[in-house]
Length: 258
Image 1 (cartoon, rainbow, N blue to C red):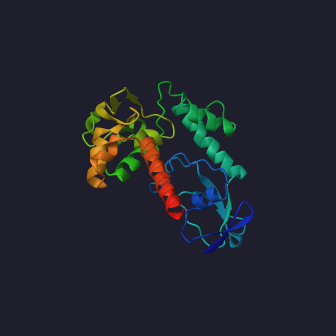
Image 2: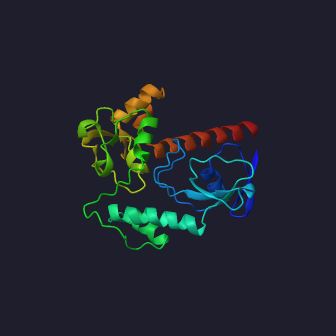
Image 3: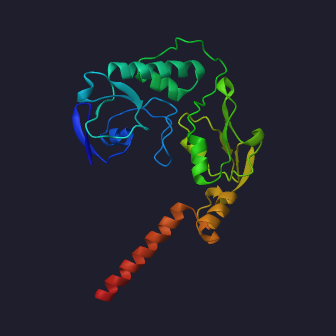
């Protein structure tokens, strides 16, 4: 264990634990749009920047991305110093110029007092901030269906050759975790379409609600050894069946004891 100081408070942490996880454990609000606990830290958005120093540094300080910087004994961290706030404002100012229609960026920028960009606006800019969260989650899921392609201003997230990705199973992990809701998909009663690929949706035999794609169910069956019958019912119906079963067991135990 190590001791460090965050915003004037001495806290304990595991040596090597990343600062962002400690900051969040202390309930301190630090933005980190590219971060997710399920994947390795990436440091793409730079918004989780914090100020660090040590008593022996004689007032000198540095600025680091907290998701990638490990805790160490004696470290002094300031999450909202004037310089840190200015750094975040500059990043958000740039984002407002490139993604002027993103509600998430507009709101976050407003939280830091940036209501209008000071840079030239990309009028047709989309909402993708290139945080890489979708591609990292897709890789972690084991699909590798999408990736970042291109360089500079033309860099984007895309399937191979910008065509329907053969490795995608329609799990929606990318879309559901996109911090700016950039990844779009459509659903009908029986179909899901994402990345220009169409999927058949399974229907719960109990309540009639659509659940997951047939491709995703087959993938889970193979990789998690889940029987195909499991996917005939939705999670809600499974929970109801389990509750009913536990109720019957409790009733039998009461009868046995009476």
